[in-house]
Length: 276
Image (cartoon, rainbow, N blue to C red; front, side):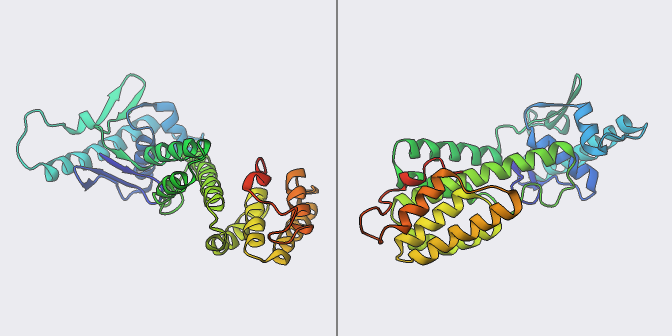
């Protein structure tokens, strides 16, 4: 089974889609696929589908949705089978009823979320080893797995919505580290367009603004780097009642008192360590 959740729902058995078109069965499949190879308790499935106000027939309706998914799985197994195999999986092997819940068996297939997490971890280890070229390449591969927001075409209840937030935070962390790796590799000018977009999207994210400031400064655009700081400070004070962090203020002071290559200029990305 191949599971795609970092964007539109795409779950395939033997290369054939098993994603239903009806909203609630899609929602059910998304949660089962998210927890592939784990038992998902019936109460969690009911909470996801009916947001704490389930109908009296919730368990019966859930069973109906499971049967609908199994029909799609059975069709996929038939279409994807090249020949009769007495040991081949059947629909109940793929979507199994177990005490207390249901389990979607991936059969050792792929999952874009698991691959993203694997590649991200490799990228973080490369950063720790100061292997910035490997970190940049690996984290870029992880981020390329994303095609849109998680579960983009699925109605999300409490469980999927919480997981979507966690995944978005993980993506932002991987993005932050990939940009840091690129900065350490001296790719300042290459990053300017991307950071322009990111700082507009994440208007109070200090580390992205710090990265933008450094990229501008290292590109010989010190005035613009200082303007980024002033804009961020005004926004933080106006909307949150906060001053920028001490580390960001030190970066601003370092840029303010230095020429691009003169004394006091931030020579390494270490100036930004810990800014968040």
